[in-house]
Image 1 (spheres, rainbow, N blue to C red):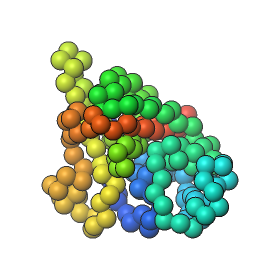
Image 2: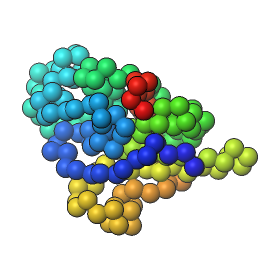
Image 3: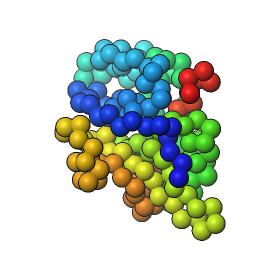
Image 4: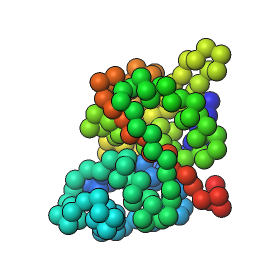
Amino acid sequence: MIAAGDVLIVLFKHYGLGLFFKDISISPLQHIVRFNKGLKLESLYDCGDKDATFVGSQQWIGSIELGYCLENMAGIQSRVLTTNSGTEVIGNIRQLVLHFETCGTPIMIGGGMLAHTILGIDFNELTGESSFLVLDPHYSGDEDLHTIITRGWCGWKMPSFWKQEYFYNLLLPIPPKNVI
């Protein structure tokens, strides 16, 4: 199994700022990325991705917007993979494994109006079988790992988890060399 570094899952309320900002709190990037509510949304306005009405709103953002924020706010570059279906997510498995081996950061993935974070991949080179350790950032309850795991908020998902009818954007943050 290849995991996203030594991931400590610490969930917190996201205050309507977009699910992917919760994802970054579990990442090794949390040590160099410091967010505050106004700066998050203003960053998307400042880079031209959103208009002024977005600042102060509670609209969701996706993996592409998170990439803009990481770049504009912390100078963290990311690689983006865009797929046309869940099958194409699986087709990129070797690239995702390589990302975990070389970068170690969680992969934010959005598609079908949902957001998830891939924390690790179990991939068998011989058989091609795979599964994904997925965190669902929609969870908003207590920080109880037993509940989070037993109710499916974080767990291993089979390739069929990625739906064929949706396209997916995957954000693969590349940490600065002196961080991880």
